[in-house]
Image (tube, rainbow, N blue to C red; front, side):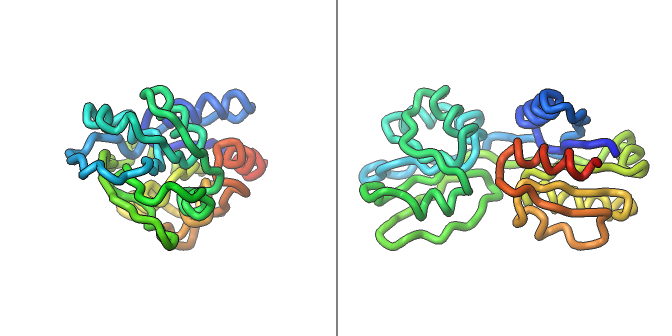
Length: 224
């Protein structure tokens, strides 16, 4: 069974390279692209830190990010932390299990957070004593399944899913084209990602941890 990744660049190339390094050939057919979104700076007085759930914030945030460079970054994971440091920011905390767990484990002192996010973002439960200001700095533009990718999916495929939005769009595209879900297996970065896709797939499983290594290990297992 061939393995396909549908995430946008630059993550797509990173996934393909990681697959090659682990002996798992992955073909890329991106079904979205990332574009900057017009956003305005909030009043910065009283804001203690930036809460960031994606490296795309630093790729597409634009010149306004310079006004925030004095604020520490609370990053969802290593990729977003690396992007923050590359953009000249200091990282104060790096999560391992999503933004909510990062928020729940936050030390006292970070009372008012500025969350920089994409247009489609996970809702968070704010712990007592915390205040959150949201700014949307990028958006995902969905694209159609190409005729070439459609033919590949018809032959049978394992598709890697990195987000719930991508999973939903992929399922909708398969239904639009009348593709047989029974020919397609899904491997997701986490269980929440599979919630929008419904039933009828050859298989649909989530990784044991929300990271690329665990996802690729799952894909290896599903290909056996």
